[in-house]
Length: 147
Image (cartoon, rainbow, N blue to C red; front, side):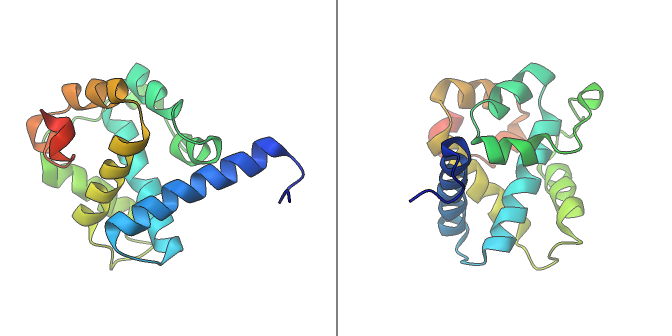
């Protein structure tokens, strides 16, 4: 049975839910609101760290619903941000999430989102992304995609 009566909506809701469940499992929480906000803010921080073309290529591989949140408040003219250090990147996620939930383990959330991206996005795209990241940021990705 269709939830919305529009297959494109039903499909993106289902796909987004699969991604959300994957991140929840990787992070170790069944708090969907917390996991969604963590995923959303991590994706936006990653988007802002990428050159515009790479940010768009990644956005094209996300479920439609998730890509809407990914592109929310994006200002391509500011890409890429200049964060070189892991702590700077984690702080950019932390600053976005502080209002939502100050109890999120930011590094654990970022690593969970990156593990799901590594599973759900094409290998070529993940290679493109990790190849342009500074070594300290690359370290947040699963070892299997860092080599």
